[in-house]
Image (cartoon, rainbow, N blue to C red; front, side, top):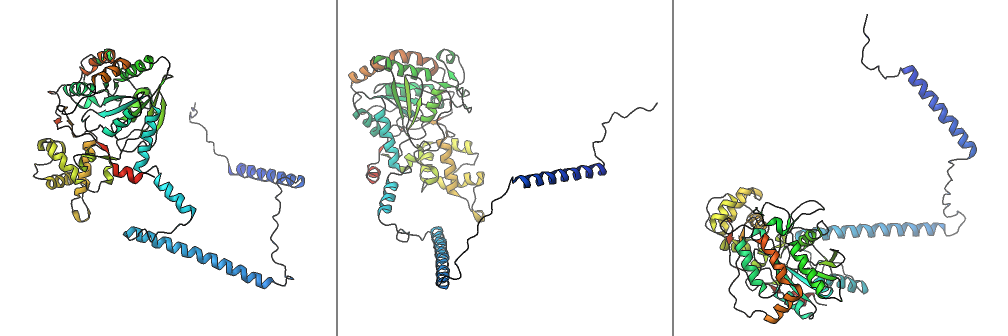
Length: 473
């Protein structure tokens, strides 16, 4: 007996049957169209055409001539504007366009444009205004410092603004990025800073998910582990305890507003995300990412204010030192080679040779040429692009790829009055807070385990008064 095939039958339709179906569908559509026509369904209304100028009108020829003239004039004006735009674009490309050649705007419109330029969000003045707003709206102001160079990331004028705002404003220093420096440096800097103001150590979460950021509690972090490998947040419980102690010390006021201030790229937005345990504000290594004040409610008792990093700064040392603190965008630097010279003065040559995998070098130009050759930064004709190599080195410095740390200097100036420090200590109950902090600081790596370069501490920054005067209106 012949076995039947287990394969499925073909689903193809014979052509005769196929054409029969198509014919029936056509007949059905035709019938439906006839019925719709009888009932008046889907009937399109006829658009009445413009009858134009009547032939009997005596001024018809004159009106037609005027219409042609107006149409020709409009087309000519459009062509002139188009040619002018092309010419301006060409001049701008060649760098020949001056202020006098720009299209003039008169009257009220010009005044409005001037006011917009002065108060524009892109100006440095706008950052200063946002800082003033945050200080005025806050009860406690947390100044975030980079643990690698806490003194270099402090702003003297910013702290004076907070202290002059009134006795009800309180300043707290936060030492961020403690995982990038050895334990001994963290302990010395905390001792140095606590002689002036309350200070806490912190490490932001580096997790990339949108929510459920991890916290490392004091009890768990006491175990010996390498904190450079973990992405959890450290010190969050300590900071929240400090803020809630202050909130409880004022019985009348149940909730407090905390302003987060500091230089660009010290980790202000990352701090807020770590405390909130989810991604609520944007973060990045580029200075000026936060453009305006942002409110984040931590809980019903604590509200956080994220402030843009203040960029109107000047240093007592040089402009290159400001670039090394990531206060200016590297792409906008006129001379990126200058800050690289500072890096070569601070770091030993063997560290840079090992990091960039280049042979030994003599001077800055030689170093940048070798880095450009290794990284493939060449211009047309095979010419080495020294500026591109300098920007690579500056990016590595700001992102922590060139490891370094500083130690606190000996004090040459008077410390805050002991009565003020003790009064702040009582309000925040710092002794209780500091006791729980020592456990996770003790689990940091020591100097022997680190291969980081020790560099001298930088000078604190201050506001650039010239820029403030220019921005004032």
